[in-house]
Image 1 (cartoon, helix red, strand yellow):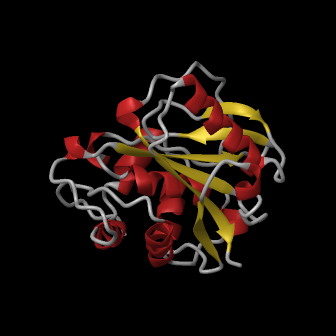
Image 2 (cartoon, one colour):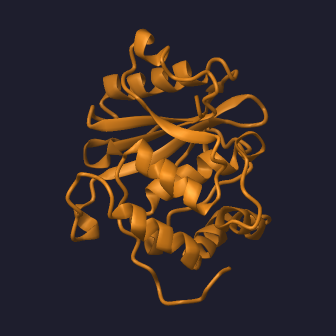
Length: 227
């Protein structure tokens, strides 16, 4: 249920796949799916990522990042903005992009907060979806609980948060897309089969590292079926 309460201050989340998996399960993602760590970009390490991966989430230090080149606008099932009221909700937004754009495979529990949010989001603009998320107290409660977990010391001010989360996944046209709530639109990256997803995302991250667009202060996770 959407609750028109006063603006909630979204605390940052750890880039910890266990914490994010627990969060998504609490709000309605199928228990058959989880986020798992991608421990490196080398072929032998990428080979360890489950073949069921449908999306990858990158958390990176945006203070050292550079602007991206322009891209065509792809079609996706779900895209939302991260407005000022969703200050540190980028980890959640990346997870929503991953789950909602793969909901037929991943599955969402009926009558769960995720299910309610999906139904509300139909037909809304990216901006309206941001406003809708900011009114979901059930998700806010889960977010606050999960933000208190992990090993990093909690940032006291929003300005202290250095990491930003984005999602890479495939759309229904078989295209690799980037979903970043800080951008106006999704970004089209390349053609991509299911089997190529992990490698193509790794190639894109490697390209950005080499070009100095991002630094090596980052964490990468994959949304996969539980093994």
